[in-house]
Image (tube, rainbow over the protein chains, first blue to last red):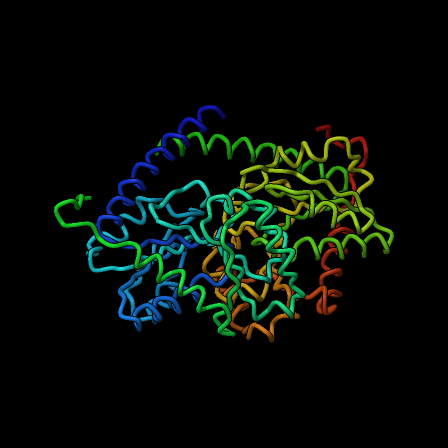
Length: 230
Length: 230
């Protein structure tokens, strides 16, 4: 058991180094990068497709990469926004790693991208320990999963910079207790910002887009002379 | 990378051996054992609580163990059925392993149990490769996750003996296409039985209880002289 932990530590360290290099590269290019994590079917693709379409309408450039064990479904859905989207097929792997993202965006000129979205494999456990070099990690909880998920999956929420309570349109149908859910988020991760959204009901989207645009605007590229190569 | 695969193979092999011994022990005791897997919040605990209450009302004995990273919430909910329920806390671990189940049921007299339910950690990827010694693995897809999840998470569905499409009560609210969902299940795993359920709307529960009771009845204990110790 010690041996597998040692090997795992080495691989995690390697991942952290790749992620650090990617973060520097994103920063130099002025590309704001988000990593979206959640259970399967929490609405990541729907929210990202909406978001990229909105950003494009506001004159901003963006792209997405998305991880799944199988199928190109999500990349195809994301591409309906008009923005480039690439599928990463993980086979049996339960999370994305930094080098998979690096490989996926090879050939993309980051300096032309205001924002890059990384949609992780649907999994509320394993992505926690894998840094992808993103500026922000966004964790989605749909109301359909119940109010106690923040308490039951603390490791991932502890790495999140923003929590989205998603699928508000179904809150009434499932008897969702929003105060309890927010209380549970705050018990695990006090002071993390929480947004409540529904793309279908057009609820909370202005606050969400303000959050995105604020961070995109803050991420200005550095002068070319300082740019690092990758 | 070869090294971590070697170590992983060794641990998986060890798990398979423990699972095999447990399966023999369950068989000798005449205990029918189910492993329930799904994403977080798919309704495993709700269905199991209902099922154990029903079995008890029919004069059958049952118990459950349930895995979560944190909280005893699910064991407490399961215990409201009147049946014994034990929580397994996995910390950061994304799945149950056979020795965790063995440790959890230590001290239980299996010969007094007609059925044992193992509720796995909510995760649609990682439990796939970990045999827990159960007779049957049941995979739940709630309608709220969308119709394409069988295609996107083929590894787990390939280990399932029964697929349950759950939360039928929300099918209309989310615009669920049941024919497409069943078609997608069959594309990955032809001939696997599929049940459509809602505990809240009391839909499909008779077929489900028939399935359970049929398997419980088929699992009769062997004569004491043949029973193996564990």
